[in-house]
Length: 310
Image 1 (cartoon, rainbow, N blue to C red):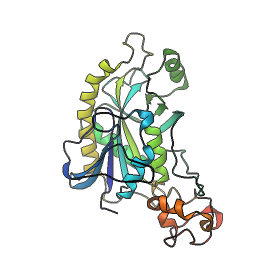
Image 2 (image 1 turned 60 degrees about the vertical axis):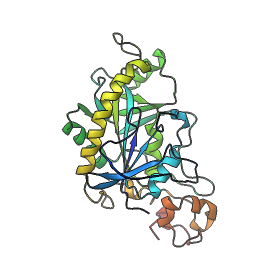
Image 3 (image 1 turned 45 degrees about the horizontal axis):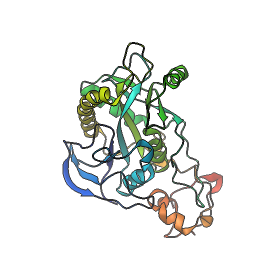
Image 4 (image 1 turned 45 degrees about the vertical axis):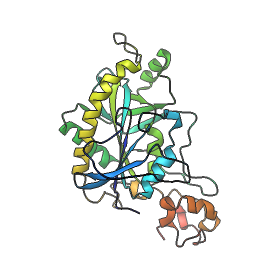
């Protein structure tokens, strides 16, 4: 493990963090394949951070092609405990205008083709996603964005669609009828995997457009989005800088205030002795603290499916 504690994933328009004092670029090999790009490891406001462009530098990777498992596994292997995400979204509400930011606290899944769990192959886990966003990290991110001069909407539902095409008008109207707040193509899988990896996760969803439901606005297209993306990237960087500067040295957890740090304690169902050695080795950065040795034969599961760190 390194002493990197905070991870940042940049979305469309945010491919680098200018404020980061770069120490190194590191390519991380994972059992799930290659992450989106090399990690930029450096210092931001005196904190060691790891930055990753979600779509790769040059925006080379479709939403459906992002290797979410490799990205989050690599963050965990670097020592990351708190993960800040910045992404571009469409607004499904009139009051959430282009240039505004939303810090959602819920997700709705409309994806179809994506791997979004670390588990399987002999190890079963069912983490709770009732509240998929870390409330402390979300509050810090929202406050930082307000401090940077942004208009922020706290809470709301992020609908994650498959893409890469934008919505049809019929879909957009139906989604609005469901009461969702923003629509994007990337953040749900990150939230799910971060919870499985016991990483605190929050996202700053930067509004670029009104999708295609707004009667007096042009339907979303790349040309219209690009200009807003550039302005959003400036605000997003400053918000992340302020959030990192304001985060306490220790994340809240273990006292009932934040369940992210112990998300697997009640989620792992497989008897320790039954977990294949290869599966354990692949997931060691994530589940290793629940096993007593270097192999899977650390004893049976705890009573009541409570897996205490061994």
